[in-house]
Image 1: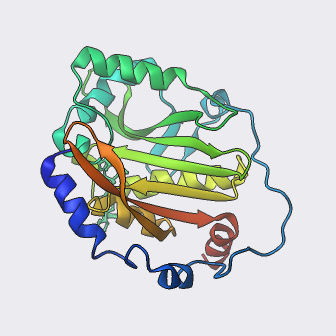
Image 2: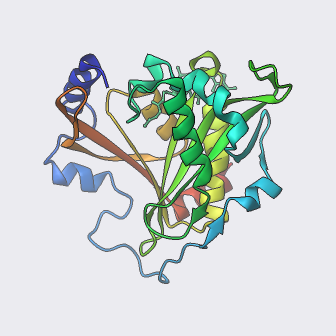
Length: 250
Ligand SMILES: CC(C)(COP(=O)(O)OP(=O)(O)OC[C@H]1O[C@@H](n2cnc3c(N)ncnc32)[C@H](O)[C@@H]1OP(=O)(O)O)[C@@H](O)C(=O)NCCC(=O)NCCS
C-alpha cells in the first residue's frame, strides 16, 4: 500500500456512504432494517468442498474458463502480481519472482473449504489468449479467492485481481458473477461479502455491479505496517435471497 493510497483511503471514508457512527443511516440502507432478520432455517454451507470438483467441471462463462489455480499458472500470475498498480490495493507485499512463486504455490495448495479461514483460489483463464510464457496454454489473466468467513453463519468472502491489461472489459465482472453464483448455488452461502480499501473505486464499482450493497466503512480497521498507517476498510455484501431475486428479475 502506498502512502498516497492510504491517504486517499482515509479521505474517501469521510465522503463515501453514511458516515461512520451514523447508525440510523446505515440501518436504513440495510435490507432488513431491523435488529433481527425474518425467521429462517439454520444456515448451512455445503462443506467440505474440495476444489477438485471445479477442476473436473470448470465454470465456463462467455469468455472465461474458471478453474482452480495450478502450479503451471505461476508465471502468468507473476505478470500481474509484480505490478505496483495491482499491489496498491491488495494486502500483498512486494515479492521477488521466487517469493511470488512460493506464494502462488501456497495458494495452489489451499484446496479444501471446511473451516473458518479456509480458502481456494480460482484462475480466470481467458480463452483464446495465449500465455506470454509460450507454453501454448490459454492465459491466466486474474484470479478470485473464495474464503470461508464463517461456517456457523454460512458467510463467504470473495477477493479478486485482474491484470491491468485486461481491465475495463467486464472480465472481472464476468468471472466474479460466476463465482458469486457458485458461492450461493454450490456452497449454499447465506451471505457473501467483499472487503476493500475505500479508495479502491474499481473494486467498489465491481461490488455494486455484482449487486452487493455498501454496508459499512470501518475507520482505521487495519494497520498497514509497510506504509505505517491505519487504513479504513469498506464492507460490501449480498444475501442469498437478494441474489435470487436479482437473478429472477433478469
Ligand atoms: C478490481 C478489478 C478486478 C476491477 O477490474 P475492472 O476491469 O475494472 O472490472 P470489470 O472487468 O468488471 O470491468 C468493468 C469496466 O469495464 C467496462 N466494460 C467494457 N466492456 C464491458 C462488458 N462487456 N461488460 C461489462 N463491463 C464492460 C465497464 O464499463 C467498466 O468500466 P467502469 O469501471 O469505468 O465503469 C481491478 O481493478 C483490479 O484487479 N484491481 C487491482 C486488484 C484489486 O484491487 N483487487 C481487489 C482488492 S479488494
